Length: 229
Image (cartoon, rainbow, N blue to C red; front, side, top):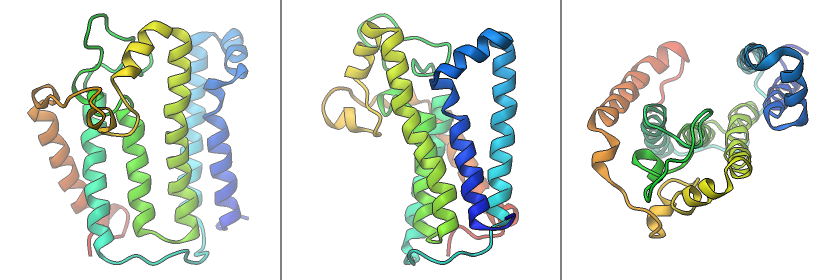
C-alpha cells in the first residue's frame, strides 16, 4: 500500500481525525488521565507524527492522474496568495489574538487591532491560502488530497475555534466577532471595522516579503519544483 494514493488518503484521514480530538469529549478524558501538561505533550507528539506521515505518504505516492491543467498565469496568482499568507502568518503570530490559546478578548471599545482587523484567524487563513495556491497549480489527485486536506482542516478550525470561544466568553466574543471576520477584509468592506496601516507594523510586512523571496529561491532546491514559470 505504501506509495499509493490509498496510502495518502489513509494518512490524511488519520491526520484529520487527530485534529478532531481537541474539540471532542475525548480531550477531557485524556486531560483527566494525563494532566494538562501531559495531554499537551502527547497531542504535540501525535500531531507531529501525523504530519510527518502525511508528508512522507504524499512524497511517495505514485502519479494518479490529473483533474485539471492550469495556465502559467496561475503560478503568479498562487505566488500572490502565498505572499498574503506569509503576511497574515507573521502578523498573526506576532500580535495579540483573542482566538489563540490562552488569550482573551481585550476590554474596551476596540477589541480587534492590527491584523485581527483583517481576519480573526490569521494563521488558519494563511494555511487556507497556502492550500488554495497549491491546488491552483497542482491539478493532480494526490495534490487535491494533500493540499485539500490541510485546507479543509484549517477552514474547519476557524469555525471550531469560534464555537469554543463563543461558549467560553459569550459577551466578549460577541463584541469581537461583531467587528471581525474569518474571510480577510470582509469586516472592513462591510463597514464593521477599518484598516489601520500603522498597527500592522512595517517590520512585519518587510519580514514577510523577505521570507517570501527566500521561499521563491529555496523552493526549487527543497521541493524540486520552481514555483514560477
